Image 1 (tube, helix red, strand yellow):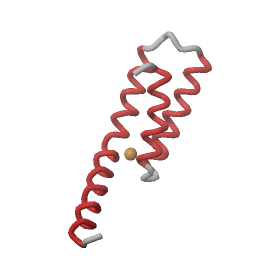
Image 2 (cartoon, protein in one colour; image 1 turned 90 degrees about the vertical axis):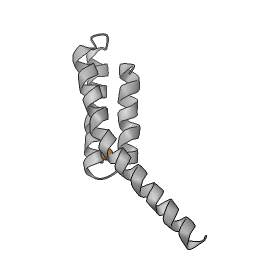
Image 3 (cartoon, helix red, strand yellow; image 1 turned 30 degrees about the vertical axis):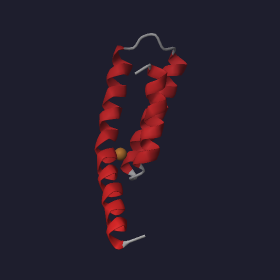
Image 4 (cartoon, protein in one colour; image 1 turned 180 degrees about the horizontal axis):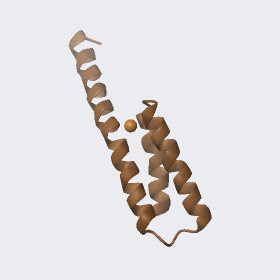
Length: 81
Ligand SMILES: [Cu+2]
């Protein structure tokens, strides 16, 4: 790979990392909002969503944004958002 190409790839991966880093808290917020308004979930389902939400938040704090987004995505799916 040429140096310029490697640099471009590096920059791209960095910027997507930053975009992901800022979107995790947004996803957490969306989940919190949906949790507050969604009453169709059972207590167990809510506990599961809460667990996934907390896991996602922890992963985000550890800098694992990809994993965080995946985990938060599961919670969102359960909430139907
Ligand atoms: Cu993040």
